[in-house]
Length: 216
Image (tube, rainbow, N blue to C red; front, top):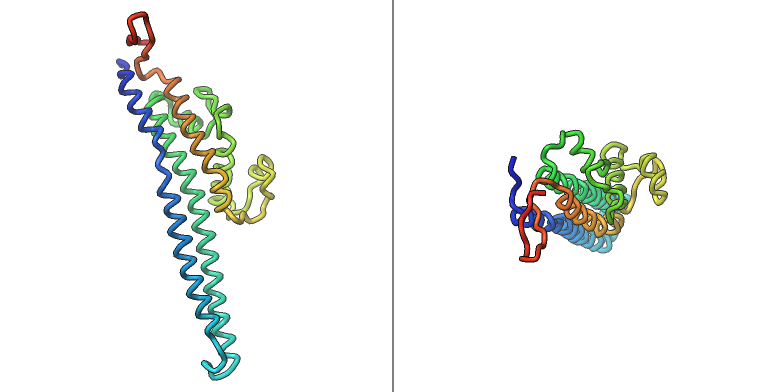
């Protein structure tokens, strides 16, 4: 099959370098804003209560307990939202890298493509790319959320000691914030390396007369 033009390759590379992660940040922002409003309303309701509004003090305490349950449910929703953001970020990695691999290494079998996306391949030395450890940690956190009841897996805890084996993973939002910049940096490095290693496009080399197209 004839190689595609270098110009077309450069166009695709530019598109792949444009990583759209804003939707995840907006999701977290809207979730946090909504939860903050709900907490404020519950707090206002709680603080306005007095025993004169109820037939007896026991009824007041029962009502306060219900409001306490609502506070707890908001915490659960917040934690779930942050878990979803982590899963969404890793899904973004998988889908975006999958699109890049499809263009730059189309002849790879599905298993080899999956290994390359996971960072374990001879086509690209993924471990040497900036941000690889962040993506690898994100992958293991994602797996722990989905397959280990949001408790740190043995592999996650052994490779990244910040996590404790079988302990529930709390404060995932801070880890999202910690990992995301390096995750995005890795994805961009992967784009550049994939397009540097691909044989699907013509190359542009400089000659005495300027740039000429080659098929190497």
